[in-house]
Image (tube, rainbow, N blue to C red; front, side, top):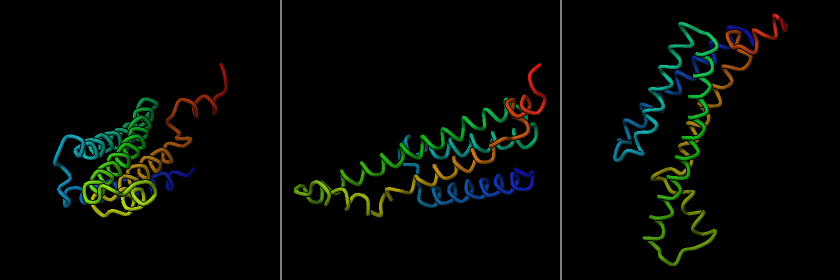
Length: 148
């Protein structure tokens, strides 16, 4: 991957983080501790981006990758939490709803949007793409120089 492509991916990641963060702030996504997780993740990503941008090295790349895997996990967890909240609400509104009808209503609910945390998964994948064969990673350094 070229340095230009890598910088573009990182720039798109930064824009995505800013966009998700702004949207969450506008939606007042801070009613309980679980809703603060995306903000913590964005702060961790900002720190990791700073590190890989200004002092790239094997440790910085590894920590960045760990943060991006945490993005994947937080996105999956957020999707489950949003979906469960929707199921709970739908069963309160209509206690007789079950099965696929309940699933469809919960998946289509607008508040909270069940698939919105998928944005965290996309950002995590984008971050991992940035690190793919990164020149500062240990593995690539070994591949270029060969075994001793």
